[in-house]
Length: 83
Image (tube, rainbow, N blue to C red):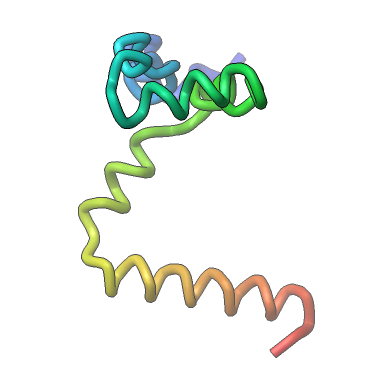
């Protein structure tokens, strides 16, 4: 059986729900409370977000992120046979 590439502590740091204290935030709180009622799946999906990818992207400049997006889009269009 293959060993996981990350230990449990690392995985908990990358994948976890947001803090309940965010419900008390004056800006984020109302949005979270509304989502909890109208679309709780979005709240549940937060735990599935790999925060390491967000941190990596935020270390890039806006131009680098745009260039990455353009390359990704062009690659997808090539796969679909479009220009």
